[in-house]
Image 1 (cartoon, rainbow, N blue to C red):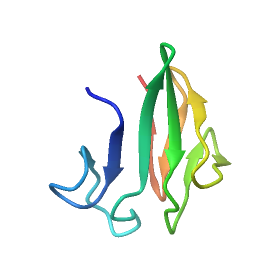
Image 2: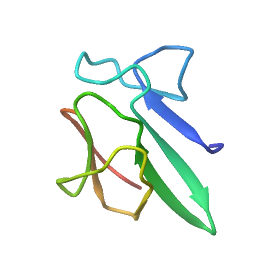
Image 3: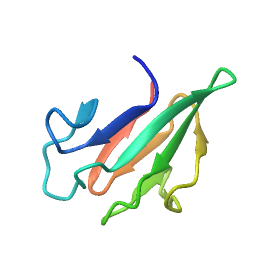
Image 4: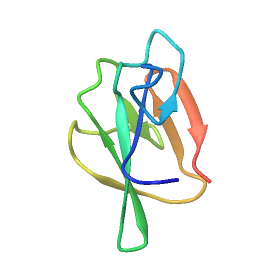
Length: 79
């Protein structure tokens, strides 16, 4: 995977497509820096959460293995 890695519902416009109406067209992005991965919400309508904590838009948050990441209503476990 190459970074930044964009997540949203626009096929062909993002790297990771989540086909759900609750997901924004370009919802969030993953960034790699100094051997760590960071997640940033890109001003999505329904929010991005890490371990049930709502992320502030356009702010990078470090994530680690087994964190629960929720894009609007869709939850994933980071691995």
